[in-house]
Amino acid sequence: MLIAKRLTKLPPYPFKVLYELKRNYKGEKLIDFGEGNPDLPPPKGIINRLIKALAKVENHRYPNYEGLLKAREAVAQWYKRRFGVFLDPEKEVCMLIGSKEGIAHLFWALVGPGERVAICDPYFPIYRNQPILAGAQVKFLPLREENNFLPELEKLKGSKIKLLCLNYPNNPTGAFADQKFYEEVISWAQKEDFFLFNDNVYSEIYFQEPPPSLLQIKGAKERAIEFHSLSKTFNMPGWRLGFVVGNSEIISALLRLKQNVDTGPFNAVQEAAIFALNKSETYAQRMRKIYERRLSLFVSGLKDLGWEAKMPKATFYLWLKVPSKEDSLTFATNLLKNYGILCAPGSGFGKFGEGYLRFSLTVKEEEIEEALRRLKKR
Image 1 (cartoon, rainbow, N blue to C red):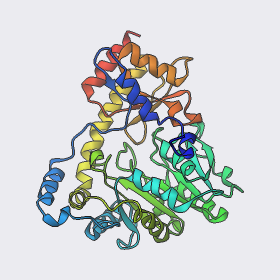
Image 2 (cartoon, helix red, strand yellow):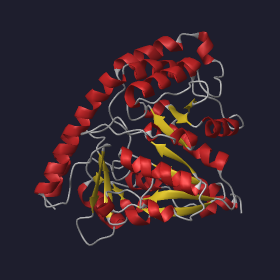
Image 3 (cartoon, one colour):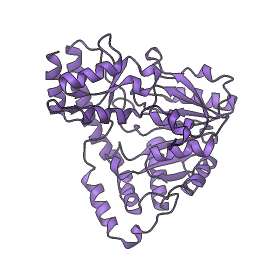
């Protein structure tokens, strides 16, 4: 066998499946609600700052592993403004080549064979696949609609996990976690002696109250870190820039692994990020209005068609029940084949994602209207 045995334990990557569906599609113009890939451009001010940074010769040398200090200081200042959380930029902040990179490396830095990780189901695939590659065991915590897609924390009692993985605001469900939930989580972490992270990359895409940070909770820094990204907030997914904040020992372990795998992000991109974070409030407000209009338009149209649909509190995802007796993959495949509309089947996000569909509202309003017109013919 050519490939490593560990790779045979991984299921097909859901977005690779979506790519194959798109590649083989031959019908009318595709309307792609499949992947959470922002279609909006980055603000011009950020692009101009990148162009300026590109002219600096020193920015084209190897970056350091933890990121530019002035970039980490900008992150700390943003966390203070946005969440009221104080961070030491030298020890409690690390820049990443996208939050996905950091999360993947975190599992390799913290867990191995014989150790246990708890993840929520449905899940973003990296939470399931990286522990498997690291040789760890995975405990699944179901996210059910009747519990507002929050895990039942009582299931952590006696679980002997080393790491709990959270993602709120949540992909794929759009669920929202409040401070009370985070207080309960930290209490369980202290009682059951485990560490945890929250993937908070959708914190700025909200439509009611602003989502909190896990690190706002007393005692959280003793056990937790939080990931963030510039991809969703500033429409910079291709730039590959994120950061992690919180417990200095966990960040140190992550850096030790990164030193043997890669470097820090491109310095010119980090300079653009400093500008972005300093303008965050203005840019994020504009973006939220666009996504809120898109979601409202789609939800209203689907309701008129008899689908069960309601506005999420956060994220640009619409997570809804399959409006037929078909399984999610069959329905999604038929939706593409018959209507030229691509969405993500819930089964791609785990066992408890079955019966649901995820639509990413990273498409323009005219495409949403066209999708609704096509569905009326159904």
